[in-house]
Image 1: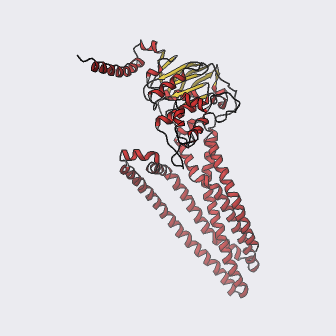
Image 2: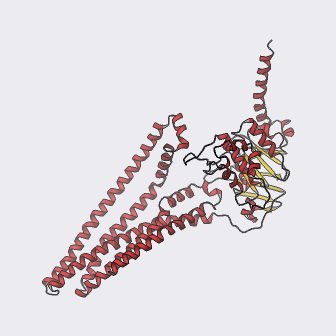
Image 3: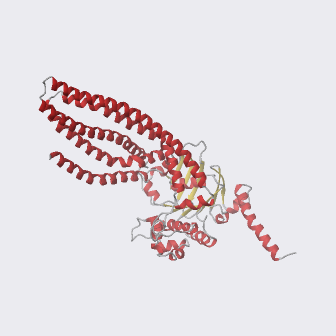
Length: 530
C-alpha cells in the first residue's frame, strides 16, 4: 500500500514539476541567447554549443526529474524487500547488491559511448539539419525548383546520411559487444545469488519456507534494483547532456555586455579613433584602423565595393560590435564606459538582410520601439509607414495593419521583397532614434518609394544618418562621404570634392553615370535620326 501511495505521489509530483522545469530551462536559454553580444554568433564554437544545448541539453532538465523520481521509487522498492531479505538471511543482501554491479557498469559505459559519439557527429548532424531545412521549407522551395537543385540536395543528404549511418552502426556494434559482456557477467552473478541461497537451504541455514520467501523477495528486489539501476544510468546520461546546456549558459553569460556604465541620452558627435575589427578565425581585419566623425544633423555616406568593410563599420558605429582595437567615443566618452542598453536605445538600423517576422503589419513596425510609453513623443505607426511609402500598401492588405504576414498561418499574407523593405524602413523610422544606420535601405524599392525614403532621411537636423548604398546618386547630397577599400578608409569629402579627384569614388560614380548617359544618347539618337 505504501509503495502504491508513493507511486501515485511521484506521478503527481512529476506532472507538476515537468512543465515548470521545461519553462525555466527554455527561458534561461533564450534569455542568454538574446543578451549575448552580436559577435558571439560569428563564433563557430559558440554556434555548435548552442545547437547542442537546444538539441538535447534543453530537454534533459525535465528528464532528470523523471529519472530521479524513478530512482527514488526503485530505491524504496529495494529497501522494502531488502529488509525482508536481511531478516531471513543477512548474507543474501550483499550478494544481491554485488549482482547488480555488472549491469550498472554496462549501462554507464553505453551511455558514455553514446555521448562521445554525439560529440563526434554533431558537425555532420548540423549539416544534415541544414540540408533538411532547405528541402522542406516554403521559403526555399521556389529556388530549389528554379535551379533544379533536387538531385544535388538529395545527393548531399545521401552522402551525409551514409557517413552518419556508418558511424551509428559502429556505435551499435561497440554497444552490443559491451551489452553481451555485461549481460553475461550479470547472468553469472545472478546465478551466484541463487546458488548461495541454494547452498544455505541445503546446509540448513535457511528453512524451506524461509527460502521460498527469500526467493520471492530476491525476485522483487532484483526488479526494483533493475529500475534503480536503469534510472541511475539515465541520470548519468542526462547529466552529460545537461552539462552541455549549463556550459553553454556559462559561456553565453560570459559574453553578455556589462550593463553597468554611464547613461547616454544622445550625442552631438561620434568619433572613431583608429578603430579595427577582426572576425574570429580570420587573418585579415574587416575594418582596419579607421578614423572618422559623425555629427548630429549630418548624413554620412559609406561608399565602396562589395567586401570593403562598409557594413561592418556601420555595425561598429551602431554599437552592435565592439572594436578589437581603437576607441569609439560619444561626445568624448569611450562607449565602453557607457551603458550599452542606453546607447542602443539611441540607434536604429535599417538593414538589407531583414527578417520576415511572423507578426501583423502593425506589429512589424511597432517592434521598432515596442516599449515606447503612450505619453512619449514620437511618430505614430501611420506616420512612419507614410514616410517609408508603406501606408497605402498596408491599407491594401486584407486586414490592413492587422494582417498577419506569414502564409503558414490561417489568414496569413505575404509581401514582395520591395514591400517588406518598405515595412522594414517604417520600423526604423518608427524607432525615432538619434542615430539611423541605413544599409542599402532601398535595394528592393521602386524608384518612387526610394525617392520618398531619401527625401525623408534628409529632413531631420536632430538625427545623424549613416548611409550605405551602391546607388551613388543617392549620396550626392551627403554632408560627408567616406570611401572604403579592403577595410581601410581611403577617401573622405563631399561629393563635389571627391568628384574632382582621381580615385575610387569618381571611378565608381563615372561607371554608374555612363550607364545613364549611354541610355540618354540612345534615346536622343532614336528621336533625332540622322
